[in-house]
Image (cartoon, rainbow, N blue to C red; front, side, top):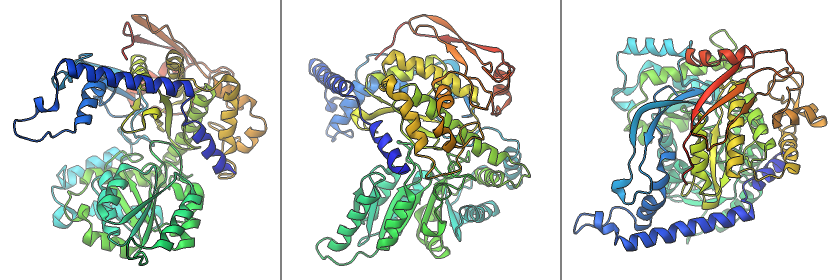
Length: 610
């Protein structure tokens, strides 16, 4: 019942309200008509920027979209930073010419200044992206011992060190498999390994919302590809049954092999894969399961072992386990884990192992140290504390956004939170207003998503403190009011939080509420205090931690002072759970931890450009 409720809630939150959808389509149509008129007036064609006698390199429609749409709002993407991607980050400020036409006008220039912002965009789930007291010294020692930054060779041509060998053993032990192989790039882990595992005569059945790297790898394999509806095990069963009955195209021979590919957490939806149901279908038809844990390894499960631990599924039921080190481990690359025969086969035939440069020794040591910290090999509980902090932060923030009337996708414990915008004109508004108020957020629009499903994607980290999240919610709440993004009527907001809570007990009977020892099952019986906390009023039940309020001034003011009172409403001035990851953040939040007020000066533009 829980997974069904969660799926229904996510589907409801991914549907644009009628009026918003209608105005969005009208806006996009208007952009298109005006752009075509401008091209007609200025006699602009792709051929004018192409060498004479050569075919255009760019597609005509793509060229038009970049010039007339993306070029006007490009400042909302590709923002450079000048610090580690920790809980707070320094965003380099840029100037961009507005309403410029043609490729020559699409450019930005640096102002020489930066803006200290709360980081809601980086993949830094466990907070290893910045300096760490356990990991960083070991990385430095490895670099000094080996004496090189890059491997400068593939794994089979002198790029393998003792660190790589030890890391692969550590990964296999961590995920519960016989062996593992490390690849130098996360995207290439899927795109280069899938073609080795499947070829002509094989069948790949892929979730409709799988990552682009999976799509590219499946297409490159030459195997037949079928798609099942997102997270719908019933439809997967029907697709498998029909595919087996029909056999291969034209010959109708049996398939050489069938591989089902799913993700632990879907990066654009924040939803967890319904793994038990998928495993049941795979067993029924003797199909292999390829599980992409790029976003779930380290982030899901009580000890961070990913989707299998989260769902209580034995790793023996998963044939191929893939993951990356860029999300939870503060490094680069990816891995494939499985039985020894399969991994040996990939070492002999995988292009990423044979030809690509190996992960640098320093990066490999960072990954190894993070694994050991999570396992408690440092003699402390810091690793497990990070995982608990991540879950508390993610669940608290998701509840808060739902209680404020936003359409938010994703499941319990997932650190990925898509905040639905829908309207393409609101997308740059949301991005720019958040940045003006010292919140760095990632926005995603067409063609990465359908036109009517534009969104902001929030990534939560264990390095965020509760004060950070309260500040972010106050800013997003204000921006949501300004841009009319609160699509949920007030009467339905509390039910959205309750619906989220009701999806939890059947999966995790002993799941706890954020920053509390109260179980979710108990909170559902008497949710009043938690609903008040999520909505921004009062302290948590039994937690003694108050929710600060941000008194935000109107967006039209040229310079505004935002005062965030970080006192405990009912907790006697207790400091909020969470620990600053570095000295700069500790200094910034020192006043907050003592119950004082933190004053931020936010420089605002005179108007909002859409």
